[in-house]
Length: 481
Ligand SMILES: Cc1cc2nc3c(=O)[nH]c(=O)nc-3n(C[C@H](O)[C@H](O)[C@H](O)COP(=O)(O)OP(=O)(O)OC[C@H]3O[C@@H](n4cnc5c(N)ncnc54)[C@H](O)[C@@H]3O)c2cc1C
Image 1 (cartoon, protein in one colour):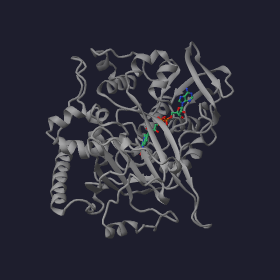
Image 2 (cartoon, rainbow, N blue to C red):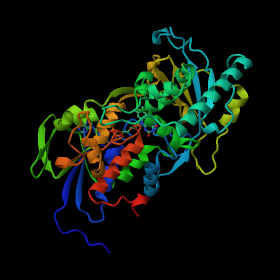
Image 3 (cartoon, helix red, strand yellow):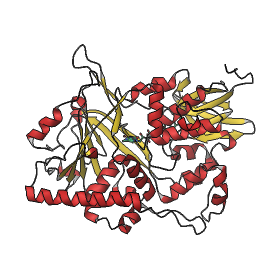
Image 4 (cartoon, rainbow, N blue to C red):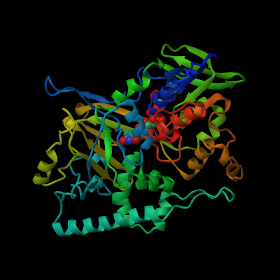
């Protein structure tokens, strides 16, 4: 049996209760040698991971309540290796979730103010992973649809082949050349602009919840890596919603809500934090270590040492609305195909009524609105292009979304570089900070704290990295065994 450590426990403040903060707090708290006393701090008056999720009452007295995750918390095999291992370790139940995506091209002149009445029907429907034959949408004539379908399949195949065989240009630190952007890569592989504008960008920008131009500025490696790893992999969602993950990660951790950090000041023998309480009073505390599991703009304002680096990381505000206003949704399919979809595969899923879910992508050429049809008629619209009937809005929330660019990728990689990579970064002609994650007792965690798309996997990877740095074995890390 392992002996508990007799020396004083180190105090750690983990700031932020998104997935990154919760996973970090859990890993440090469960240290078998009990070397860390963790305090989780959150500015809101509730834990944020599932703060905007909606509880749907059971349809009958025997049924279980359902949760609609807001925003969506889907994941896919291949890309989310560490998230899946963490869920398995925690005993979180999840299930495969097939999606049906419809693509609607809005007329260029269409204004959001012109209302949703003149929205055209979708021009194409795509089944995730080709889990079923893509149905023929209730639209134009068959010949036109067949030509469009053949065209999109050929473009899709070309893009997929390129992802596997044509690597994006990487950065050159000696010359200051940054890594290749998605825009440059798509032009280099001659992917037709029509396909890019009407299919590729609407689909991927709905994953990254940003505008088409913001997505084109991403490093190409992010999108290619995501595509390679998720190719032919199923999508999953947590069966009872991410609200069931929260208590498992929080177990035993000291939680202080309504604490808004204002300053993080490293001192010789620890880190001072200053914060304001819900009652408006300011206070300060000392911890041995501080983990900032917040977005980079917030981390930059709290910890000025990183201001110049972190302020170069692009962010945007994303609006997500849960509602029951169906006015922007046009029927996707012929009636027979709709009937097929309604058949729900209940086996192995208990009382949860789960079938194929539809995601409607409406694109005006620069932005894509996505409308996710959840169970029990709840719709979750992200980046709405059309005004919604206020009386049908159940909840509306804004989220900070961290974006990517070749420059931000370089800055982030330099912060999280390991000792072996130190030399190559010191040759860089781009001005990089000498600060590395963990210096001065300050760590960063978050969906953006890794070299990839800003999704839940980055939250778990960055939490695991901190634990490993502090000598804590990650219980779900099979590579450490
Ligand atoms: C609309 C939308 C849809 C998405 N869909 C998916 C998806 O399907 N799959 C997927 O993998 N990812 C998805 N993502 C991305 C994913 O949700 C994020 O990458 C992830 O939630 C980021 O978690 P985090 O812990 O890094 O940060 P956050 O969740 O942003 O947590 C930061 C925390 O810090 C707190 N905080 C901030 N400032 C302070 C302060 N001064 N003092 C104290 N506390 C503070 C905040 O209140 C918050 O609790 C989606 C994101 C959005 C916006």
